Image (cartoon, rainbow, N blue to C red; front, side, top):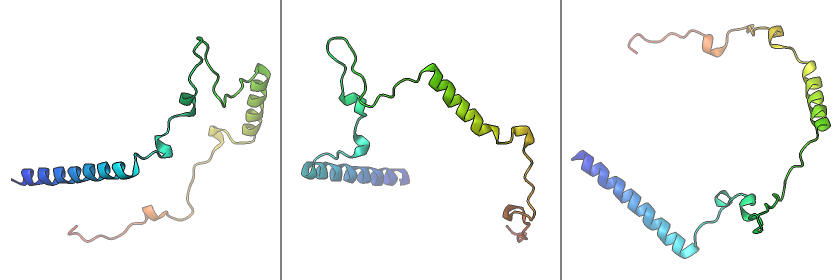
Amino acid sequence: MQVVKVGLVMMAGLGSTWAARTVTDAWLGRPAGAYLAQAAAAENPPAAAGGSAAPAAAVPPLSREEMEEELRRARAQLAGKPAGADLEEFRPSRPLAADIAIALPSDM
């Protein structure tokens, strides 16, 4: 009997939610929030003559020299940082809060 009661309550909740959504959509129209919008590329269909249209905000490809320059800059930034073998293990000077022993009653 409990299962039937739970099922009826769930169906009543879902039904009222559906009814409220239907009424508000009829009065206010369907919501068109930014989270429902499609990507900008979908709004610009490819050309009908078989060619493809370029995306509006396409990033130009980097040349080989530009890629090498980016890698050189990244390696220069990483040069001053210690490698994995040079790192020291963290040893706290005082016990951390999770390491402190606490007394609990025996009936727990």
